Length: 289
Image (cartoon, rainbow, N blue to C red; front, top):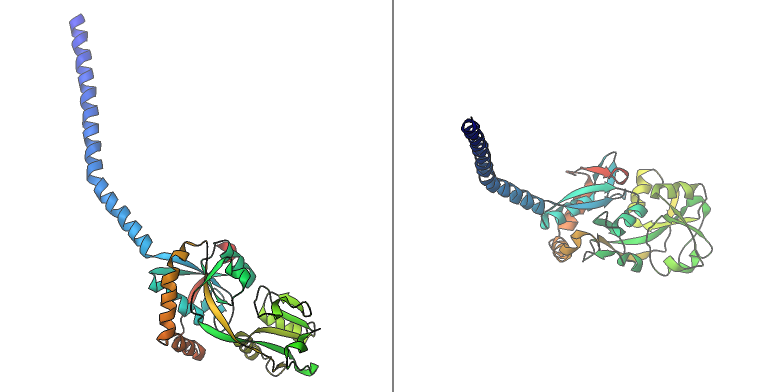
């Protein structure tokens, strides 16, 4: 009787060992068969991610450089950023935000790049300027036509209430001159409305954008472009200093220099200005980003 149970127990243990052995062999077969393919897929994914890195680009409604239509955007700057992105094998995601918030998001590294930026020491602490500048503009002043103001020299600005876009830069000594009072507002179009209602005496900004808005919204015959201007203000693309994109700054400088030297920037600006064959790109919103 003892021998019978002994042999039954022995057969049971051998069967369990055989089952475990078959499972182990099967598992090893699966691992050795699938791991190479898995490694290849992971390597391919890594390569794809590396070749399709993303530039999170700030978009402010600043026509004709960036023009927003609902959830789409077009404009001179968007054509440039896509060319810069292709030069370093990146893709572009467009993030819509007000100018002041865009600056903050770039400072925090939550956006990688923005455009239409003039140089200031404060901005240079957290943004690297892509060289060379991609355009030059004049800083101009508009007044209400019926107000009969005349700004012919810098000193004529003293004592006036000057409207400007929140977070915008102009020039020194205007930026830090305590003899001039500024009122900051979120949008450039709002500045024209405030000017016409005489809540500000004059407004200041880059000529390209202000001229565009005056014509588009029918302000041209209601406002006066003052003779005093600050000429030759350089305007740049910039990269956040804490963005991973900063490692590509030398390549971005080279790409911008090439676009300018070969006349591509001039061609793009004419193309966008005429409104022919203009590309539109989808927008994300900073609030939902």
